[in-house]
Length: 149
Image (cartoon, rainbow, N blue to C red; front, side, top):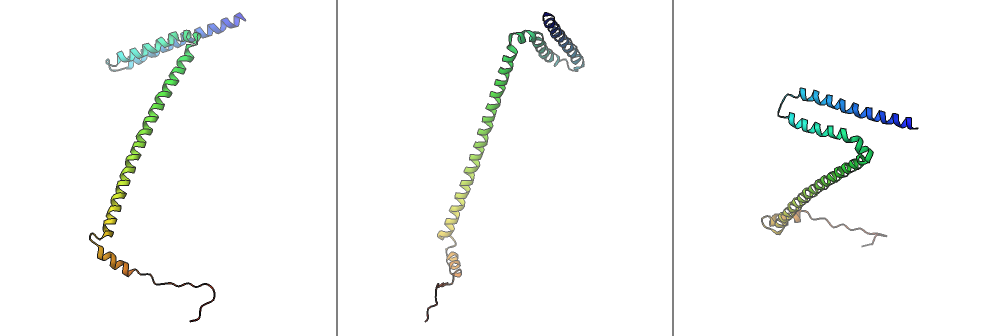
């Protein structure tokens, strides 16, 4: 049983050293390909942070901190996305309220204009004439037997 555990530790250590070597090689290739010297210091800083995380990752895993870091990252990302969602929703609601108020004002203006037209502020005679032209003839409906006259 101890031999199996020793093999697992060797494989873990081998994988860790392989990852660090591969990352270091990748860092050097990217730095040599980068054309601008001004960006080099920022890239070296970022790559250095990633290398530090690679080096201490086994210690973090052993202490169980890797799960806590993952949970913290997920929680912070969720909180940020939730806050952005609420902000977008509030902006949409405010835009909807503005459009609704504009439509209500337009409808009120149209209603006032119609009322002014009907009150006779310029077309009172035309309204009376059009009412006379539109008389409905009297219709008489009888149910049952017809009455004799």
